[in-house]
Length: 447
Image (cartoon, rainbow, N blue to C red):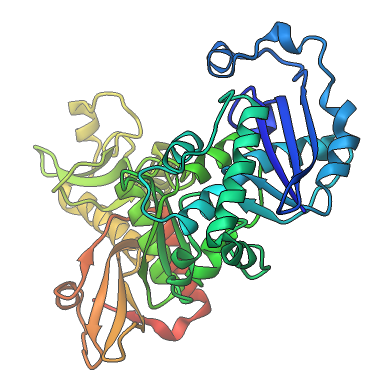
């Protein structure tokens, strides 16, 4: 038994919107055996643009039943049948969400007539309900009302069945089929082509714009997990509707995938990636010599093409570090700009000579550099004749690349010839340090 369903709503996602009208046709594959249709009071105002589309206004639903009042009837009609709708996940997400709020848990097989029509009648210019009915010469009356659209969907389902659609339906309803849970614009073939190893995957919209970047140990499994639950949240529903294509880049290891994911998020700034969108490092510690020959330390905004002693995200982080250096090595706070008061001739007169003071600076910087190690991480690559290499230089991530498997290197300068430079950030740096803590044998010290 098929339950062909159509609803009208106050908005595009179930968690914050109500249903204003519902129509259900129970169809046994040959004829309609039951029909239920009613307006519903959504207990919220109907937006003007919805009224202009459907014709349903606040006055029309004022005396209509609440959803919870018809929930027992709906559950009785829908339980243990195949739930059918044009773009089924939209209607199903609303009804499942509101039934659950009323105390009923709906868990049935779903059949999407958009997907079924694509399989049965490939090559049509559009698979929207209105355009399909025009292309197939099917009657469609009372458009954008639950009763009219549901009735047309019954005709469409019957027409698909009469033209070889039964075989497609049987496949689409199998437990192993992905048809019931995938976003509208994706097919099972899109999932099957994905690799089962580590890498980075990209969700694209209809214009090929990247919506989301993710990393995975198993790309196929991770991508599938995005679609296997029907969350009524607005952001998630909008996200799922926009996905039209999946691409990917395979990686040799999870660590490589972490680095690539973080880099790609910063590069493309995808709409639906909410983490890792913090600002890049803003501040750095610099050293310069003043007019009297004294080496001075200063924190400033990070500048391109000027050598830094250390980079950090927060100004406070740098100030705390600089104060510790000043205390430990007896540096003058005014010469480090910790004390912002002007440095007078009297201050200079009270200082030791530049030769002695600069030795303190040298010791402080050397101690800092010892705390900021330079090393490489070497791991397996996708190709046997290569090896993956990541470089940490003075505590910051410098870059990543592949080396010939037999390459022997001892210096940072030599290694950089093989690597591609990457932007450093906390996510990448912390992941690398965590990796070498667990795999110390894959760390190679450099000079």
